[in-house]
Structure formats: structure tokens, C-alpha cells
Image 1 (cartoon, rainbow, N blue to C red):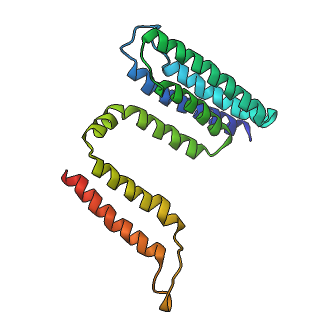
Image 2 (image 1 turned 135 degrees about the vertical axis):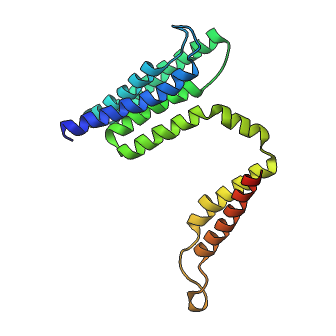
Image 3 (image 1 turned 180 degrees about the vertical axis):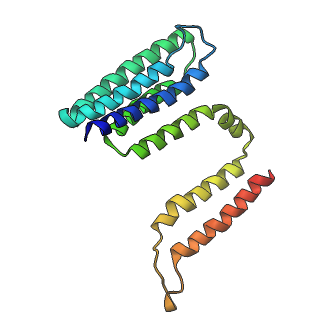
Length: 197
């Protein structure tokens, strides 16, 4: 890995942490100075910290990275526990976001940068969608939830295990193709239902 790639990977680790920090900082923007658990700067540093340890793990080995992550996890958990006692509220999101910023920082340094960036953006979208997701959970019925889960199971559990080859006379029956058509029809019906509702 040359110097340019190293700096690019560290920059991505920093950017992922910064992106998560923007969302967390925005969520706690009303808190007084010194009252915020972790925000923009803290998460940016966590991402960079993960990136640096990802690079160092190439020299020091995976065991060193595991020990650093364990130390980070203990420190972050103790910090969050003290915050919970002080505030009288309980929430895991900021703690999990900190673990994710560290882990994605590591992955940006040693893994596929595109996957690390995409996972960082997906994490921020999930964090920012809190109100929308909670409102959605209040209006969805059990039948709608069950139908969604069945469609997902059809797509991501059943479809991959069906053989993708022909059977019968002239190889006319392809279980994978038939199931894919079933999913397409169910998906169009589901989208239509959601659009009407």
C-alpha cells in the first residue's frame, strides 16, 4: 500500500466517523455544552482511531486489533453507563454507533473502501430515520408486517437455495425462474398495496 492509498483510506475512515458524528451531533444539538455524550468531533476521532488501528493491525496482527477493540468497547460501555445514570435514560444507539464508527474505520483501512463507505451511509440513514421508523411501526398492522416478512423470506431465503437449472421434458421447468416470477408478481402487488395505502 503506497502513501496515497494509506492517506485515502485514513481519510475515508475519518469521513465515515464524521458523517456518523454529524447525525449524532445534530440529534443532541439542543444539549448544553459539555452535556452532549458524543458528537461530530468524537465520532470523527473514533473513525480515524479505527482506521489507524486497522493499518497498524497489518504490522501488529489481528490479536492487537482485537485487544484494542475490546479496550475501546469497555471504555465506551463504561462511559455510556455513566451517562445513563446521570441522565436517567437508557439508549444503546450512540454506543452501537460508536462501535460501528470504529469498525467501519478499521474496514476502510484494510478492506473494500466502497463497502465501508456504503455501510457508513446506510448507518447514517438508519440513524437519521428514527422518527420515520418509529412512526411507521405505529401504523403498520400485523398482517402487513407478516406479508413483508414473507416477501423478504421468499426473496432472500428461498430463492438462493432453489436450483437454477431446467427439469422435466426439454428442461422446461426451472424452479429458480418460477420462484423469481412469483416474487416479481408478489412484489408488484405489494408495491401497489403500499402505494394505495
